[in-house]
Image (cartoon, rainbow, N blue to C red):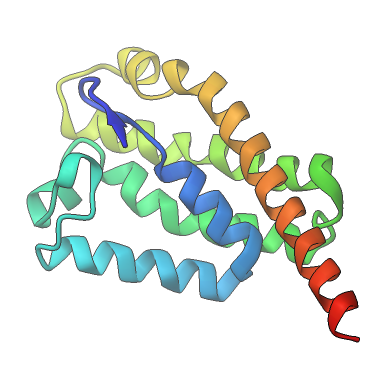
Length: 158
């Protein structure tokens, strides 16, 4: 799902990365996202709007794409360090890495386009902040609800 915006589309990719990080842990989350990037580099249409190839991987959104690896790792790291209990903690574990993603994302946008740094921030970060809050909350509710559901299944089996 993608809302076309130039030069960075609004997608649910960060929601997916948050869910991966919240549930997979540091290493598996990072390797999963690396596999995603490899698929896109090999031509599979996995990037926003069905994009693929090295041109997309090193284009205006390259900082975000490569930053997804760090985002997944950091999300998993926060969960492994205690931010795994309850919706509030999981929301923090999802939101903090989502905001850190703006560092490589905006820098990549600034380096690959003719935008100055201020403009890169205005088009590559500001429009997405509110959505990142919503996506972090949604990821936290999904993971917390899934954990409760798995616990209830476990109590049915024993």
